Image (tube, rainbow, N blue to C red; front, side, top):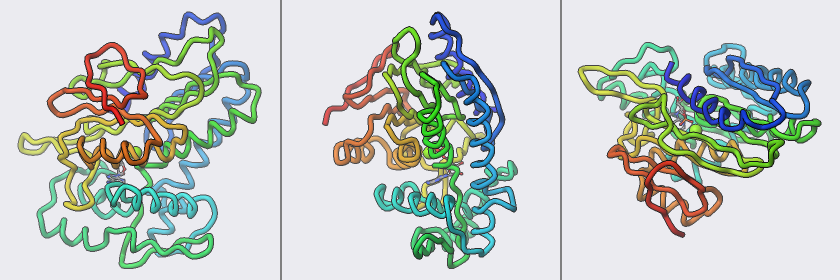
Length: 325
Ligand code: AMP
Ligand code: MG
């Protein structure tokens, strides 16, 4: 349900372009455990291709669909091809982020019940047992294939939608479409330039009231904007709220002082992996990572409601502190 809010926000952002002369062709679908909305200018037929691609990737990468490559991998099979390549990339992002992003968190995700929607707080022994299977050293890469060891299990939930956005952008660039705005849960992909030539306006959810925007990011052309937020999926037990972004070190929901991170980059898969990782790192470490890499821009919202934006972000509608290189 909470994921719907991201969509509503993205749609609200779309509302800002409703004044353009040409109305987009649009479609909604449910894939990758979220409601997605697609808007395309200049080539209505590409909507069918995009829908097919998102459905295909869902079937390939879903951790809960027993016939997916990822479920087969978790079941002990060796996999190759596209899913194996994405697991290998996920392992690279894990190394780059010092393990803050870790696709082998699945035993923990399952323990906390985030996949099965049977959420509960596990005890420390259960967390320790699950943690014993977590770590990218358990991903064995050989040629183009992947196998797991030590009872490890992979969950690409932190990167799959960003990767799907990249695949959709590739389809769009091979089509007659001149512009598109794709909202895939917390992931927004812009493509091309709207008929009226104006920049894309993308709302960032207010973590304290996710159905309203706290600020608006302007981007020109093609970009991936990915938000990871504790408000997107969570449950409350004994008055405390537990969200779905887990700290692979503690085995518990990350308590880093951040309530959301939005990453803006050319590459959706990277933006998605980084948004999850930066959320786990917390503000100071995330800013240090940005200064080191300079491959993306980001907006951080702290638990106290303060907003920080790296110097390349065009943000309006809110007060914020600019983070300089
Ligand atoms: P996102 O919404 O992109 O931040 O991804 C969160 C999803 O990724 C969760 O629902 C889990 O399936 C998975 N996940 C949780 N914690 C991590 C982590 N530290 N690294 C990688 N994936 C994670
Ligand atoms: Mg992510």
